Picture 1: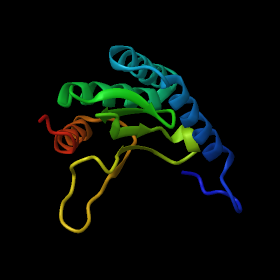
Picture 2 (picture 1 turned 90 degrees about the vertical axis):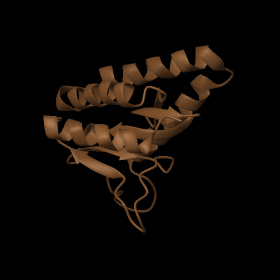
Picture 3 (picture 1 turned 90 degrees about the horizontal axis):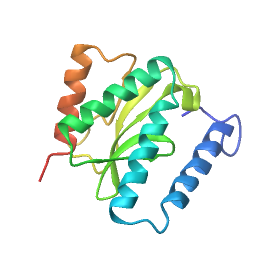
Length: 148
């Protein structure tokens, strides 16, 4: 995230928090298939709203997650395309345009099963999805969210 220039949150951080509140409000009262459908559409809309490399990466991550962990459900998380198990985010793509950062990241939340000793990476900078990058993301998604 972009560093704030003083006490408090940056404009981008405030916008993300507002967006998250709107996501939660939009899902209020929805259950079952209706909720899943609305969350899926929100994820697809978030991807579609991106441009250039951001969109290409998000689209590829979406395909990878749906192929490697189809039991995860698409949704948004602070406006990011995200994929969850039982409502809890496992993996998400944070485009650089969101916080005006140098690169986008494929990140794994605490529910991801990537534990490896006393320290392990949970966020990976992605500039483009090459065959090697795709292979690595696929491996990480399979490890992070094994099917039961």
